[in-house]
Length: 254
Image 1 (cartoon, rainbow, N blue to C red):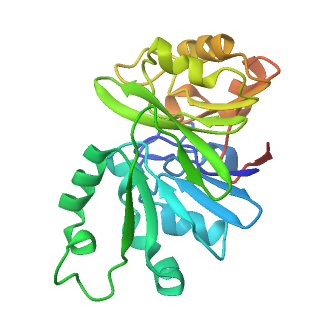
Image 2: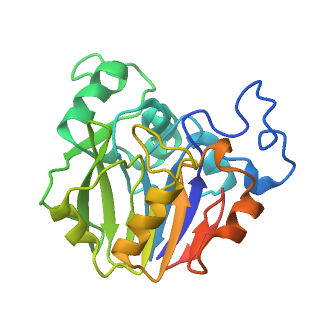
């Protein structure tokens, strides 16, 4: 599988609009982060996890001819606001499959009613095939079985996803013990690491490192990174040799 990090930033992205923070003023491209998303490709298949407000820009930078589906982690805007920009794929392919918790589907129906309307759907709007994701029930995507992993973003339920030896978790603060078992044996783990200071709904750096030590993958990549974590190159020097700060447009193979 080829993993492309489409975005590795927080809900505001980096640079934050109007911020004079040194990281926001950095010239290093690794310090410029769009909203968090990842593209997973194998054989002829392309799946995206989350479709935030930077989706169009991300797809122009990392073009694919076909989009086989979108998996949503949760309903927050930085993970869903780009759904209208699936239109070019819809015009070429027809309905685009989406996968999400029932609560997330209902939230999308409210926010993007012109897409999800059963009748009188707005002309030109994309159309989707809805697939409800349930915990402890795997998904068959192409020729791969994908395992949802339930975590918590403060009190909000969020889905991570395991694709064979690769697992992707974002907006995590706590992980139930029985869900941790689903991650054992992964070779590559992606998880959020917001900043050094504690946060009410995200792993900070210390918590993310402890989680990596618990799961013990061969390699781990941090995402959903705030400018408060610091400059990419400086933070990377402090990390264990098998732990990396992801950055936009990074490609890895699993």
